[in-house]
Image 1 (cartoon, rainbow, N blue to C red):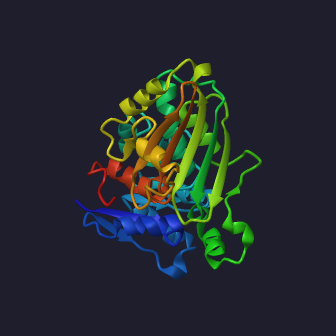
Image 2 (image 1 turned 45 degrees about the vertical axis):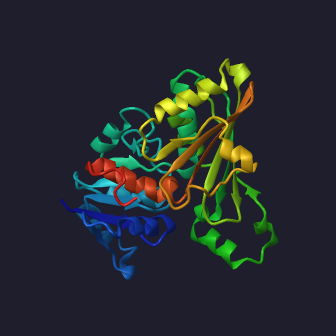
Image 3 (image 1 turned 135 degrees about the horizontal axis):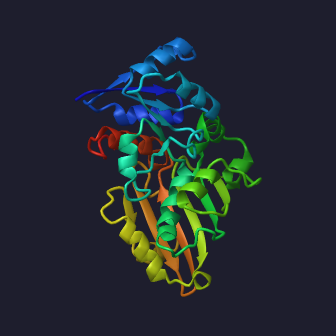
Length: 311
């Protein structure tokens, strides 16, 4: 069976990567808009409503406007922006979120693609909240380091043009503590207290590593219990690997490889710990499982085809 797909915002970083994922698929016909008509509302509406699946790779306001153009009840929208990630009626496009989430995605015609930082944070915390190891009211903090491709075309150009000494070292940002991923991090991790989140952009193209520290003695749990809850939740998941407790390979090298999941749709999850403290870590490709790969995976789930098709 063949499906028609349209990418609204096909020239952006996420849109281009989605096209790459779909290029070799025989079950998908990609509808293209002429470059000179990319801002033609009527033409965009025609293509959106002609598609079985339409990806919105647009800024938040434009994504809301695009969603309002869709009148065909058979068109499934997958929005890569932040606009709909906590909006009722939109399924959160993270199949591994919780048991039954694939059924939610399959049944929905409105799917909000998770953010890159948010995906890593939620995958680390949600199983622990569900298992009662981390209370929903627990105050947590998180730090995430990511490659500059997550900043889009303008930031990519800045880094690749060079000449700015500040770009040679890691740069913490969102220091007002209002990063746009925080609402979905809180909502979909099952937390009732807003996490403190510090993202950091660094001088490499892609790759992301999220770190969440926990005081195990204050929580009344152990490294083994935390690791077991994560391993149990993700047992059988093809795109998530829970690495051994205190992963020997990482400890032997002494350094964590932020880019080891690049060019894949994989998430690697780690628990590093002593008797009373732990650092949970998740790494992924911020353009893969953190953006375009996640969107294609959600499409596959919705259509009922092999979840890894094209990935």
